[in-house]
Amino acid sequence: MTTPRHFITLDDLSPEEHRLVLDRARTLKQARGRDERVLTLQNRVLGMIFEKASTRTRVSFEAGMAQLGGHAIFLSPRD
Image 1 (cartoon, helix red, strand yellow):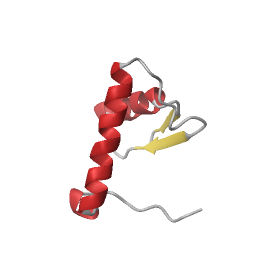
Image 2: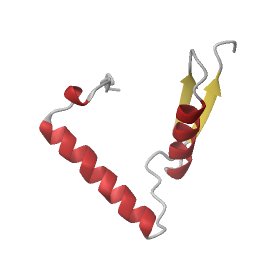
Image 3: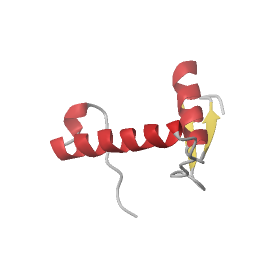
Image 4: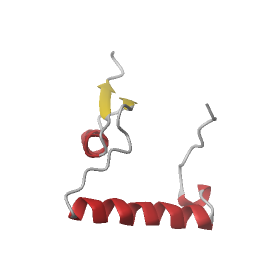
């Protein structure tokens, strides 16, 4: 397994990586327009813990994971 890179700002990506991200976004958008399912994250689980309430972010990540075939689990700081 490789060590993950953290993506905090656009400066963390090279110009080539910017192009790759935009190309991938275009591909996903086109597939969605054709009602094709893209299961890039099938059999993957995302665990989310937020220190502060972040409903929009949590729901956005849950929706994205579901659209790409994955699952999202939310744990509150109290869990």
